[in-house]
Image 1 (tube, rainbow, N blue to C red):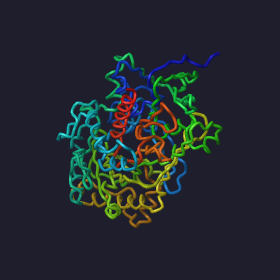
Image 2: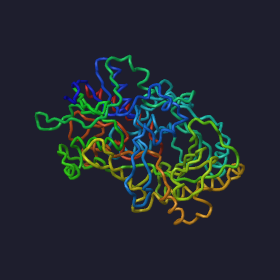
Image 3: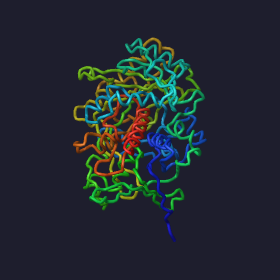
Image 4: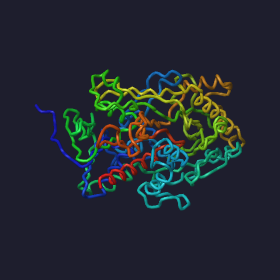
Length: 532
């Protein structure tokens, strides 16, 4: 009995309906002469309130919409941590909270200085204007893009008090996305969500309006891509000709072929995994699993960057809010002593304010919790620790080995920044405006005061902001560890590009969701340009 499906052919095949992949599919299919097929392993989000109702986003963690990747045992970090990665159309823009930041110009210019020609602020920020419909003031904002960005309304009284306390601690109240990078300040987030609380993911913003209206666009959910098909060209080089997939029935396998190009948008964990399963990666690792080495690319799965996140957690003296846009509505940026000494031009510390308990990593260590509390979560925006993504086996159904290697940078930079962040969080909440709200400090607790005590707490209980990136980074043509060139083409392969957060050389100093959408916009532009 056959277990295959008929082979179909399109101009472009997109492997993974991630944050950037949905953008690429929508933009390419604006040209009616081009055919596009997007394959996503997870379900559709169309009409699914579990996904679209932003206020319920925390229910998605460890759910059927989450690949829920464990991390490998950590040398200096939390080995219990799990990476939530979206298993749904729209990728993590359909799964995580919707904190919406323009990428700092300084970080983009640093990308370009590293050899990523065309990725400086002058090239990328216009793409932000194109994609957004922003309610903020200023001519630098877009008003007609598909993605609604709006500022969180200041209706949480504890949040209002927190901003007053931050100002008293030397961090003035600011607005974000106003054209300058906030080095020291706090404010209400902008979020990519409609006024009715509907998530404005890339799938909702870009694809939902055109599904069923474009005969040249096929969006297929429940299709799990197993490998990219590579065939030799006449000169012996390899060309991507399509993908092999498992069908939604989990029995049949099939192939979709690409006349022009294959675009991978599977995220910072599954994109390097898919490359390796396709014969692109470190030869030694591929040979370990008897995978033919078609393209030696030592940077595949290396350079894993993430925003590592700590926690300071208080009992609330008054009832906290019972309704919210997404429960995490305020951001605090600061430049630490380390950052000032190094002359950083972006903040090296960020905190999110949560109006809910967040004991995900503390209860197992015996820290008390509450049903009525709030927290600040200091995270290291410019971490120096780097991890890896490696194969567990040659079976595409096996989870990759994810080893973030948190707090392993030899200078101890990341732990020092986080330690200062814990102290700053306490200093903010000690200010008079928070006196009516701040009860007992539940974690780490008032008795944890020395550097060693804070470090022990951090390394046991830290979380992630769920921003893994940079595992197939771009760089100059002569950069041996760069997996893609500045036009997002996989080196050593024709007709294959990557459009997701894995191509970032390093993480910017903010939440990267909008940056990843811009990567999709730029990839679509380059594909159209190169097809002319």
